[in-house]
Image 1 (spheres, rainbow, N blue to C red):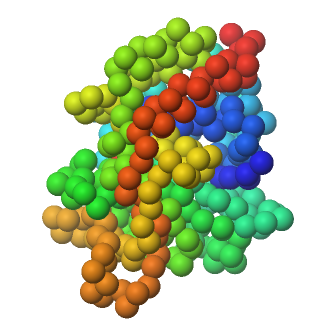
Image 2: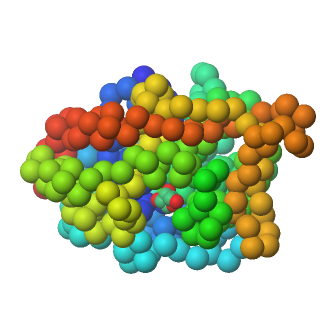
Length: 310
Ligand code: RIB
Ligand code: CA
């Protein structure tokens, strides 16, 4: 089993990613942390608790994280994810509570007690992990790698150049990309290729209560492309479990933190300024058919976990 910390801003694609992670026996989620992003941190925290309750996984601790970016004003994406962040399905009453410890302190504790360096997956803005780096340098050596949903070398989804997670908190992203911690960057370069067709989303409805829940959420999801809907965050979990689905290239990546290109990620593909230094393994291609087939195959297992939650 791979021990991981998951830092998320559910949000519908986060919720789909977490549904897979919570019900996959290969992954051992040591801590879930919330961050403001798609919706407020109060709502992203509640949504994490809704999902641990739904899948009878309330033993997984949840800690509340940053309510706003390091410097920028907070702007949500409720226009994509709905007011609640997980619309369309009536979840069972939450049977657990978040820790009284804040997310960054909880991360530092888990890392300091870990027998081996751990992977941290971040699918929202990187505010929490930037604060971890800034306030707990003593645990940085305990971070094996960051697997990040975010960034793009091929155009943005919030501006012409910036992807939402980095646009939300570019200063945090700059801290993370300069931290020296190995990074796997799962950006729009692959997530916009791994679309779930509307036929696939409809087929999910008939796959038990977990499928019914995911179908309702994915139907309400406002992020849509010709050909289907991008489940951006699901790709971080798929990469952890099946990295062979992804083609990656090693680059030095910088984050633009101000001006019209704020939030953009720029890779030194011509080795113009980085002198051969590398800070990220960037996903540049994906086996999209294998991804969609793998996604559908995760849902039957989920139903074994959510029995009795109703
Ligand atoms: O740009 C897509 C990312 O922004 C995803 O993580 C989505 O959940 C939103 O947070
Ligand atoms: Ca997200």
